[in-house]
Each structure stands twice: as structure tokens, then as C-alpha cells.
Image (cartoon, rainbow, N blue to C red; front, side, top):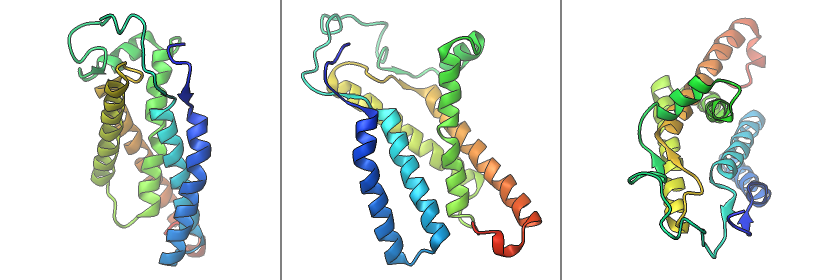
Length: 201
């Protein structure tokens, strides 16, 4: 192990999740949200906490001393190995390797991780979001995540997480997949179900 002490993903989630859920309940009660909107916002808050735990943790605690890396061990010119700024480089490699390699499933995971975001964007504000807003929201959140990973890596002095332009592409793709799935389910639900059962409207 490079670091003996870390803040684990599960440790962050255990601490942050109750705080987030209590905050959502207090805000919802103040706004007078109904039962289903409250459930939706609680689910979105839980998703946000879990996503943060997965993309930023485990986080290494000081002292940040990396054998080899401290001695100048590096790969290529800046920004390597801190970031990959070449679009479709990582995605292309994952697709070439195929499902027998972990890079492929990491790509699938990056897409799947943002599918719920697209669903929540459609379900929680159905009249205020379009695919363009879903695209922009997914783009902004993904860029913030990658910049946070890069900033934290620079802080500890080692690329504990590599910021990747392809992560942004796959995350935005996942957001649009989720939003599209919600829109299809929304149209089908309104056509099939009685109006009283369309609880997400």
C-alpha cells in the first residue's frame, strides 16, 4: 500500500449520508413537499453522497510520501500521469480490449454511475429540464469531479485519482441515457396509467 491511512469510501458515506438526508427532510418540510417529491429528493441525496464517495475516496491522509514518485519517477510530460486530456484515448483502449479487461468495465461503470443523475433530472423537475439541460448538468458535474480529483492529487503530491477527459464524455453519455430512459418511461406511464398513479408529475 502507498498510504497506510485513508478515509475510505464507506467511511465517508456512513458519515455524510445521515447529514444529507436530514438536510433534505428539513428543506422539504420547510417547502411543504409532498410524500413523493420528498422520497425523490431523499433518493437523489443518497445518490449524490454515494457518487461522491466513489469518485473522491478513499482519500489518503498525511504524511503524503510516495516512494519512487518522490524521487522523480514520472511517465511522460505534463499533465501525465496526473490527467489524460486526449479525448477518446481511454474509451478507445477500453473498447479495443473488450469485456475481458477491467478497463472495459471501468468505462461501463463510468457510464452507469451517471444514469441515475439523468433520471433524477427528469423526475424531480419534469417541466424544467430538457435533454440540453441534462447534457449541461452532466457536463458541469463531471468536469467539477475531474478537476477535484486533479486538485486533490496535486495536493497530496501523487495522482491517487487520474483526471480523464474520457470520464467526462462517458459521464455525460450516462446522464443522457438516464434522461432518455426517464422520458420514455414518462411517456409510456402517462399513456398507460391512470392520472392518479402518475406520482412523479
